[in-house]
Image 1 (cartoon, rainbow, N blue to C red):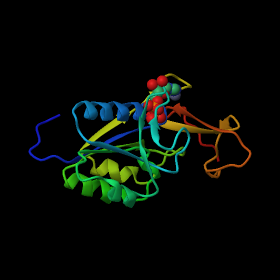
Image 2: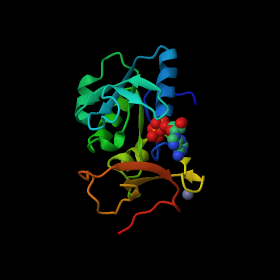
Image 3: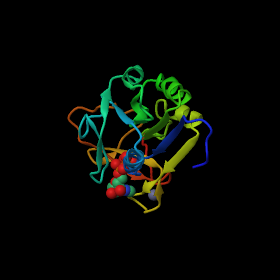
Length: 191
Ligand code: ADP
Ligand code: ZN
């Protein structure tokens, strides 16, 4: 990274599911720890797929995280001597997260965000497009398309093994739901 006269900026690690966002976030957090930086990690409470108080990657790496209910809670929880703030699953936050990241970066904090850029329909996800626009450094990761082996930029939603319709509810009671990585060409949204 270049020499900066002032500390404080926003990094955004984005891409589809399985693209390695959590791995990359954990890697950056570990390196900041080695550099004796004071790091705080946050994640929205909404995502309790694995564990509420950790960032966990699909290959089993993990690091501790503080669960928060909204973006404002991050501002309240950041301690005076913190140099690095990492925020996972940024797409699930309210739009206030954009101002929170800006405020922290303006104060001299290195803000590292990670999250989905697109939802299962292939549309920009929550505040992610705004963070993309604001960030100084953007890393777009791709997974491997499970259909063709090409680079996967999309997340395929499956309900009972079949591609989910555009208008399927976010929670479908009694149905088994799963996600896989696919490229633009193999991504299916019936209906
Ligand atoms: P993300 O946070 O973007 O969902 P993770 O960092 O949790 O990604 O997981 C990345 C890991 O997922 C890879 O290192 C690999 O072990 C595993 N993986 C499973 N399916 C795929 C796939 N289709 N393409 C790439 N990696 C995959
Ligand atoms: Zn494909």
